[in-house]
Image 1: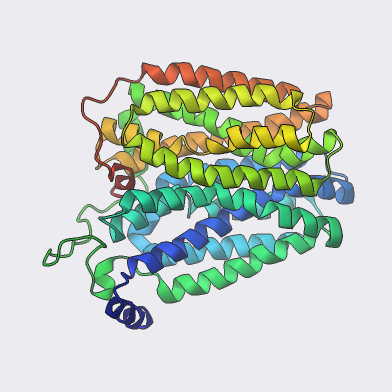
Image 2 (image 1 turned 180 degrees about the horizontal axis):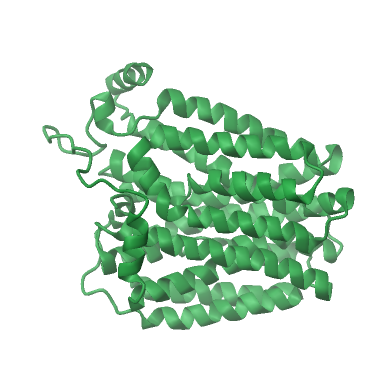
Length: 435
């Protein structure tokens, strides 16, 4: 009833309730991504307090990335069966509890339970598919803009919160940095409980931009179950486009979340840079990413998406090759942050567009869910592999070179995708929710 009254009050002022749902979704994804990025700032203090090696902590973070990604194909199933509000509240509760309880942890297995299991599953429930579902259900006009902004929040939250977190860790200890995440999870869960509804018809509206007089779209008659993602995977497992998109997205995760997000602060520490300025560089990447991802969505409607991915992966690979030679000055790292940050997740809109053109709106959601799972498996590989290399070789340089070479390889193989016969419609990105 509360949401209905708010919707009517906004409607009298010419504001569609979909923007409220989109705003709460934005805050949810921002908080979840901040929770994902925070452990990267805690590797050094955790190691100093408990004697855990970089490799051991990286193992917990790697499993978290894997679970986060593997939830992707099933997130749409959960949202269809239980509704947006229930899934958002459940995810926020898992993340809030996991982050709160880690302050009492003293054993490595507890870190695996709280950060790998609870954080991985909670954030996976509200991954990129949540933004696609909200945009597809609540918007007809401005759908691409909504998808771009919600997608950008996923990386921006991971990076923008880190300077504050690093400052809190430096002055008050690592446990203090968890407080904003826990408080944010509680507040946003309450907002979701009060304001989020499953479909516009729940508050007596049509989607934003739908022509007046149009009959509200009914809930899909097709009932998904937890076997549906596996059936779709079996159907597309030998498709060349799927294999290339999954392989290049594996490399995307390998070269972003798993490597830079997880290990950048530790990497800068090896060169004498303290946590706060290192986290500030990550925040700068987040700012460039926000611009780059929205711009990428605009470009993906107008240009060959294969060529966009060629440039994104190629430039990212070159920037990773250059990073060890940047001398880790503010100027050198600022230059890296600009080039690297602009395409942090700029690969998402072209990848979704290519998947939509190849598999159609009926399957693209679940197909992209598996492609996203490959992304996070790549992140898990880099999170553990870079930590192992750092422990064994006392340097991150081989991991940076390996990721850079992988990006150049991705830039080449993405051109092997057949060019779509007909460009996707501008709103095709949001069709990811329909499956």
